[in-house]
Image (tube, rainbow, N blue to C red; front, side, top):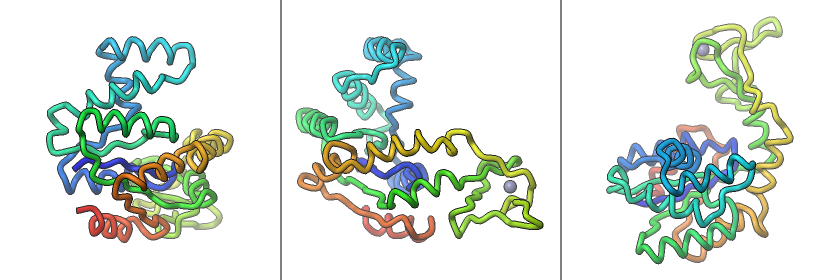
Length: 224
Ligand SMILES: [Zn+2]
């Protein structure tokens, strides 16, 4: 089962990707991790990529795509893979699709997590971290994950710990807007990439406004 997953930051790609990976026994493949592995192992592609990263430049698709192909040919991908974080734009989508065709690798599904831009931004900015356990979900903008409020202070909804924290990245509005700008661009950006796949592969669209449990159930019904 080979799956490509799309969704704006804040739509729960990690969470829903894991649901599918657990069901099919496949690994979640992320470009960031692939870059880091190639660089730390000093592979020829890794060395080339590092040159661009060190200069603060984007790694060209001619390096990224072969790296992804070599990753999805590894042993743990024998039953398939779920890739997220790539392609980010239409140009990359076309190049990646052509590469898959050339390698005769079938893409079974494209999953598109649907969430409007404003809600996605609020979900990121509303995240609060429990000082005791990172896995305790708290979010001041998500009804199902509201922290407990007492005398104007917030406490972890799971364990009741005071002193909920925010992550600097989650509060960097400019960075969030920039990433969402690329994602929601239907001309050249990520949504243009999704549209490109709609003409070629089965694309499953999933409304992520619902709770995690309902979205997961819907996802498992649709991808089989
Ligand atoms: Zn907690």
